[in-house]
Length: 125
Image 1 (cartoon, rainbow, N blue to C red):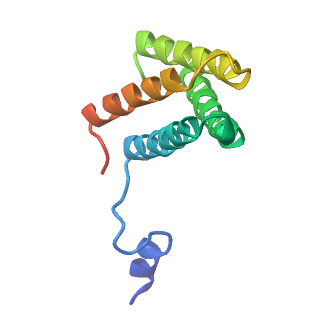
Image 2 (image 1 turned 90 degrees about the horizontal axis):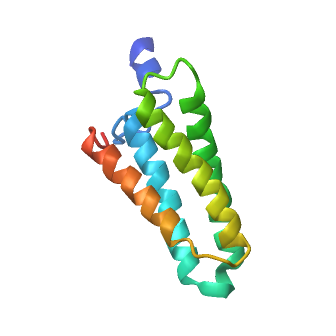
């Protein structure tokens, strides 16, 4: 095995496909959405699990909001605005869920819609 071959495989798991950025986003949304669903299904007994899932979901959406707010972002302006709005909505709705005034279903629906969009635009690799 030569140095070039070692360099190519040093940080990749053998047998694992290379993911695109879109595929990585999809996977992250899928994991967090699954955790939101599972925690919500536990009811009151799963509040701490739900709080952790909500926290991770808000971190994801905060990262997306920061990304689309960057002037160098290549997405069309109307799409950037919609993503930013969804990030704001997610933050506000998460507060309602944590206060016991609402459920997490709408957050699951939003994430699922985003996942559908990511799949349509090229999906996972």
